[in-house]
Image (tube, rainbow, N blue to C red; front, side, top):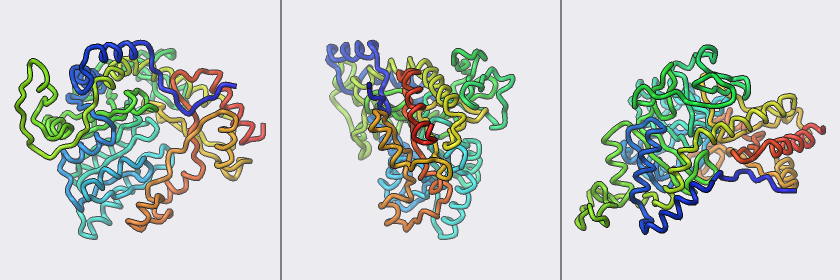
Length: 434
């Protein structure tokens, strides 16, 4: 029986042809293809500036450097995230101030962030920024984050590695009715635009600031800088890669310069007919540039982003329908004021009902040719953060309580309905005995 991997990228002939053309064209590193990819991705996300880099980690690092984070300053980071979100804070000798998550969507809890700021201030420590992560592809409490940031003078850097596309309603209170949204197919997953149930079509933007008609905002609209991942298992891919997006000219200029050794602007052009051999180093920068080979893939991936999203939404809807009656697990929820990217489909085992433990479940699914993953062991439970900051699991009770039951099921655009049915049948048999 054919194996169902945890993820398989959806790369087609368009990407292959573009890469071949790039190879034949003779310009392989950062160049015109990368500039084109930046332009098309920025237009899609509705941000004025996009800086292509070789990973989302690089984008996050450049974002912190651009806002001027200094040694010993605090940056609020959710404990429920991947290593990169906090490790880039440590690159500066700064302090990641970990924050618990919300029970319903696993996103950063703004109320807990407020408490953590109070503790830091009481200890005489500054907090200068907050880095919310949109878990699994559903935008978190960006309105709450922005209010918190305004009260405390924080910069906002969104880790949007899971989001492309993703949207939120402007006040966080709207219902789906009357907004051209159909939520019936994936719990409360929003479909924006025409109101049709067979397709997803984001409405046209009315301005370049991420705001869409009817109050819908694209991911990143509320951030000083938003950062995206194009790793192989993300919603769109370049194999490895990332993007830092902003509407702030100064941040964009700084990140662009620092992404390539601190060389003065448009350094890549020095090897072209329109460039100059002369350049100046204006800061000790990094080697974070994205190649034209990778960008050749990205150009077509961003053009397919809506279609790939429709395919993920349909598969998520199938999961929801097939597993709705399985009382041994809890399914992911999508809010009616959000358009979910469905990068991940995480379920939670209910230990009081499930007839199998998580370790056994993952191993047995693997034996049956079904790949899974876990997102994530909370940061405060990793050895580095335990030993460096003295964290205990109970310091972040929501994240620590969620972790033991988390299992992420395979979800990728080319997966197909038969594969989803196979995953669900095996899951029901193992978890519920039927």
